[in-house]
Each structure stands twice: as structure tokens, then as C-alpha cells.
Length: 248
Image (tube, rainbow, N blue to C red):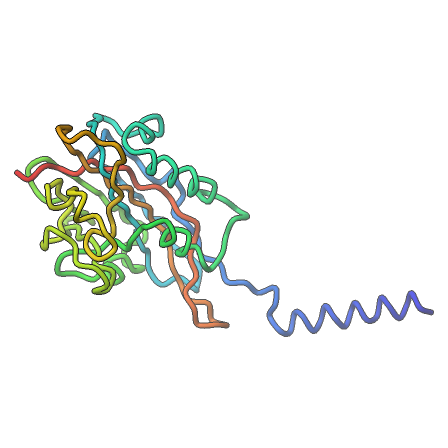
């Protein structure tokens, strides 16, 4: 009798949980890492899937800039530590989340922000609007050429990439906020929480060493949890580690 009662109670509990939507956790599809093609140290193509879940809102891109004393022709995982040990540390921390089926959570953005990454912006355009469902089935081409500002191209539409100012929390230098390797960008006294908060310095760099800078960029899909009205995120994919061009 007690066994039947226990089974009946479990049955009622399962109905209650289902009716409360406990198991109905919204999910956002990521951009698979296999959809990203990286070239040398200055170009990447991201092929956006043709659809996503009903909760999808837009794609977001996180970035962080690293100072280095070396220039590498092709940025691969083998070069990250040589470029800047913090770049390697950040990547090794984030890597398990890429293409993961289990490490998924609505606080995925905190993983990046807690490690100093910022939201990538665009000059004269809203990233949220540009990377909406309108880019389904299209390709994003990121180009860091030596003779002009780094940009993202969607078909024939060209957008200049802009560094973040944290919503006005810090004031990046140079003031134009372009992804260009300048002295104002890598100067140690500018790498503070109130100026270049998106830049990670290199320890023990020689006074006479030439400075180079690299930007790590990751893409995630974002959406709204209909139960809590909070943002939820997919797992990330690495777009590339780009070397910033010198001022032309």
C-alpha cells in the first residue's frame, strides 16, 4: 500500500513540475566553431546558421585587447602564450565552453566580463540591430588590413569596428576607439580601469621593445528568457585573435 502511495505521489509531483514549466528551459543555438574560418592574423569568416530558437534576439561579440612584444604572421593556439600569457590563460578558461552541450547557462556573458572582455561596437550602427535575425544564412567577414580601419562586412555592407567605453564607465584612448595599434592604446599609464579598461598589459616588457597589440573576439547568440525576461546566451565560438594594424 505504501509503495502505491509513493508512486502516486511521484506521479502528482511530475505533473506539478511540468505545469510549472520547470523543465522548460529556453535554449539558444550557438554558432558552431566549425562555421568559423580563420586566416593568418588578420581575417576571419563566420557563417551564421539559417535559423535559431524562438527565444533568439541577436548575436553579441566580446573582445579583449592584449599588448605584446612579438609579431606573429598566423595566430594559432600555439602562439597565444608567446603573444601574452594572459591571452593564453583567458582562452584556456573559455575553451571548454566552446561547442559544449553541458556548460550552458544564462550567465554566459559574466564569464567574459569577469575576465575583462567587453562588448564589441560598430561605428554609426547598432551591433544588436546589425546582428539580428537578418544575418541568418549570411557570412560575417572580419578584416584587419594594414592600411585602413578594421571592419566587419555583411555581404556588401561594411561596418567599422569600435572599442567599448563600458557605457561611459571608462574613456578609451585614442578617443576614436578604433582597433589600431597606437602608443595611446598600449602606453602603460593608460591601461587602467578608467581609461583603456579593455586592454591587458604585458608584464616585464622591455622599455625599448616594440609594442604590438592583439584582439581576441568571440561570438555568442543572445535571447530572452520568457519566464524571467532576462538575457540568456548560447555557448561561444572564437572568431579569431587579430593583430591590430599600426596607424597608417
